[in-house]
Image 1 (cartoon, rainbow, N blue to C red):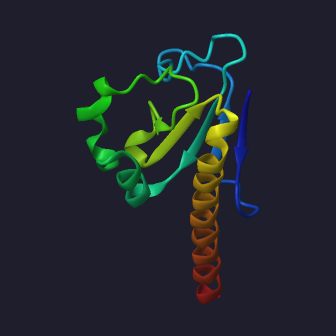
Image 2: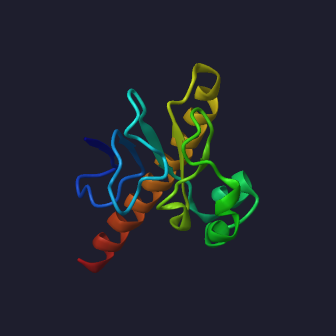
Length: 126
């Protein structure tokens, strides 16, 4: 099961997801097959990703060996979508929640701005 979080009715591009299982052959690095393990994924965008991790999303392949994607309660690049500016955290603990809330707010505001731009474009076309 995966939960998706969107802004707007089009539901085309989530700003966050919660994943409870691996996708064999594509996304297994988090080892979500362990009992009780889930992953919160958040779209940060290029600038916030670089601020957070010290390199741009395109630099993830050069830093991949430094990341243990199966570690619990650590905000890190997303193993599959990090190249697109996504981060993740497995089973965030109570002490991690203020930072998780900040990142979710950042992702929500980006999605809201993107949705507003789309509405403005659609309104300008009519």
